[in-house]
Image (cartoon, rainbow, N blue to C red; front, side, top):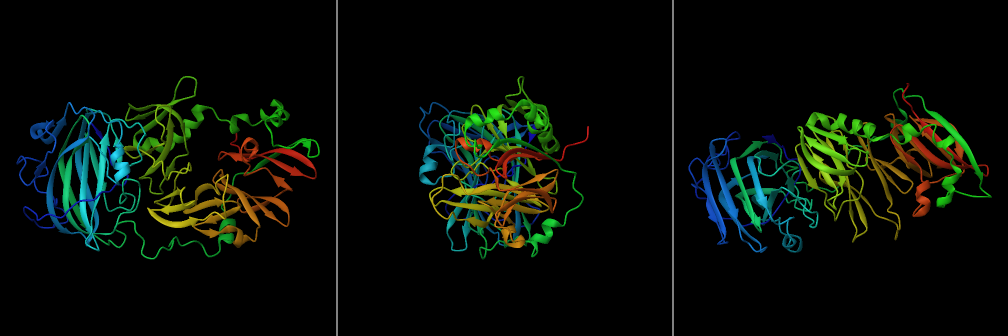
Length: 539
């Protein structure tokens, strides 16, 4: 039996009912009565609007213990639901954590996603197994936190509050729903600050489905709830950026030696790196020197990823031919058609991670986390992998309608990028984590925890910021010349131009890097050079 700790948020909307009974709010006691179902349906109210649905407590369904199970058949691909709910009456303002724990079983479902109705009507998803908690906010308005479980998802709907798990197997769900990374709606939107807990609901919805839950508990832990819900109090960052960013960026420990190799290619009067045919000027004698570092094979790529995800029970393996990969979880195949994956982000405590990957079969990018996999929110995803600043998850989201880009730290917006006008290429270029800070590159400006590095160092432009062997590397423009900085030191290389930020066909010549080296096309004194700089491991 696999155990999954969920690290993804969710939400909903519901109504207040008088509780059937009340019991003490002991920090160590479950707020749910008869969550193990040993007393059958006592304290629970069955809601069964569909005639083709069934729900009952099965005495020995989970490891010889009771479980609440439900099923729907012969739906004709028409949606409906069956659920059981329990009225609750608890003031949660004194809770810093609210731990929800249960065993989950998804047997089957025919609806291949979370349902179009929820997308169009602000619903919380149609899932074969779903749990939801209903709260009142500070204005007395009802809202909901919800999470669903599925065997597959075709990526055709937008909601992200679900977990993909192997069908027919019991798994464990455990989440602190008040954690900032959890306290989110179905589309990843922040939820209101909770004041009162009024209901818990479990059940299934969709077309044909079959599922069950067991050992359901909800435990409140006393603590500061000023951050309960991810709504900020004053909209400020609070990131504590260093007052002297310039000094901080230059205050480096010893960095690995950097090797620079320049190859003169062609006079600028004759040609420039702006069209496909220019690639023919880069001979194999040039590209072959550092190919193994510039283009590592699939085994090297998965090795770097596996060092990060292996402690969490995951393994990436390159398939024959090296064009696809298989993701395993505790030796079982989880995803068999991975086409590409992003760099892995791990928090400083080593207790959390994020891995984004694309597959052949699903249109949406997937997020792999400790013991859970989910789709990205396709409406706000911006093709940049998240990072951690310390233990805080940092992500870039986009609102295409408004044309705005947001940096979220621990679920809260800490920086907003407002483009100066219409754009072909988005202004946000990269997101990094370095020395406990988040670093964002935006159209020639580098921001460290939201503070401009350009302003601190007096540079007109900074671009190509990245880490080489763990040390900051970037280009800067000052007085019409482009220089190079590595590990806080200015290198003895200057250029009049470095190809970057180009769109469309010329973009193939934009500067690139991979953590070991950077390669780029640069203009100096009327000559275009191909340049590689790297901190190469000793052989």
